[in-house]
Image 1 (cartoon, rainbow, N blue to C red):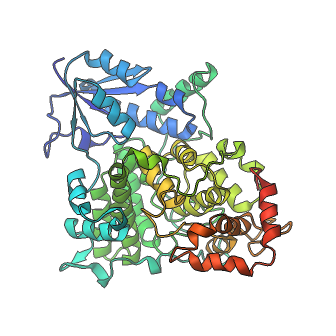
Image 2: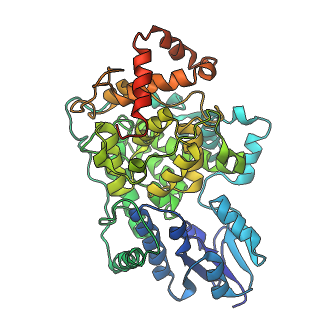
Amino acid sequence: MTGAHWIFGDQLGPAFTSPGNGGIPRDTRLVMIESQAVFRRRRFHRAKAHLVLSAMRHRAAELGDRVVYVKADTYREGLRRAVGSSPVTVYHPTSRAAAALVNSLGNVTVLPARGFLVGHEDFAAWAAGRGDGGLRLENFYRHVRREHDLLMDGGEPAGGRWSLDHANREPPPRGAQALGAPAPYRPREDDIDAGVREDLDRWERAGAVSFVGRDGPRLFPADRREALAALRRFVDHRLAGFGAHEDAMLAADPVLSHSLLSSSLNLGLLDPAECVERAEAAWRAGAAPLNSVEGFVRQIAGWREYVWHLYWHFGEEYRTSNVLGHTAPLPAWWVSLDADAVSARCLSTVLRQVRDTGWTHHIPRLMVLGGYALQRGWDPAALTDWFHRSFVDGYDWVMLPNVVGMSQYADGGWMTTKPYTSGGAYIDRMSDLCGPCRYRPGSRSGEDACPYTAGYWSFLHRHRALLGRGARTAGPVRGLDRLGDLPELLRQERDRGDSAP
């Protein structure tokens, strides 16, 4: 072999192997490497390990004789076995660790990143001169909409407004146990899945790896055909109902009208352009309302692109951001996804969803999981790693900005203008999770005190000096002076420690 192209396990769609648009020549030999060390070094969710290996093996089966598929202990060993010292190309990896690896190999040439709407150079040009405080999502989102002519009419945003968030924050219908949306696409497992499960079982029995969570029937696409079917199912049957209740939570309906496409996008099975273009086409055909389509486009062309570029723009030092000085370790019940140890119904429900599926939508991630961790002062780096390992769509580039910046406010406001945490009232308004709970969202202290309500005030008290100077946080901090039960509340939270609420 005189040359080859290396495909990482999150570069599995046709955009990473096709010859068009400056891509890989059709006669180029392809290399895929399955590294057991990835799973040995860190304790991943079993469903995530299954999905990634299934997707890689499905892609290898599609490519047939064109691909050399190597099962090795490490990537370095696998590449040596596949090509020796012959030259290799690879598209820009999605993590700093992978980028460091390929840059340390003298025979690998790194090509520009694929799988995103905005290139690194384009983002750098947009960001130039703005300073980190000017890199707000809303400005970037408008830039992407203009540059890619997404939901635009005559140079103006469709409908006259850039954001329709005001229409996309509705609580669930009163008394409803489910939203009533058509069911999402779910794949059927095949012999490749069976082989993956056998290998994972064997590795665990041998003590080579250890997982958390449950690996039931695979819930997310593992090849291009399945991913396209999931996209069609969402756009044709679920997109219309997505927007209004995208922030809502229902115990018996964790999926609501969400697309469930994040894992397919992050594996490279879907391209973001085809997702937003199909959604816009549905609106223009009158098949979906603008607020639902704009909300979906904002998630992909806005937030996903924004997070990807901030991961690289902020640099590796961003990983150690910790302006709040939070260093508490994650408790064992959290790390092991022991939902049964938790009495607080919202947290128990969401942990159970993660344990059983490796997925929950963005509000449980931000307000239930992230909010609880922020209130308790847990180490943001450890929490980032936990999110990375515990979610089927979790990758380093996804979770580092989302957790350090958005969820834990550890960067002091580079991404957001205030910490995103709340008392139980928000969860009560946006869900059906509080009604049967032993805790009451309006109680700050006492046996029925909501851990989120008490935790919210304890968090404000702990960071009174910093948050008291913020334009959006000074008011709530002043509210501490009106709490007659604050000493009792703080003593109660200290006694709680890291025990499950």
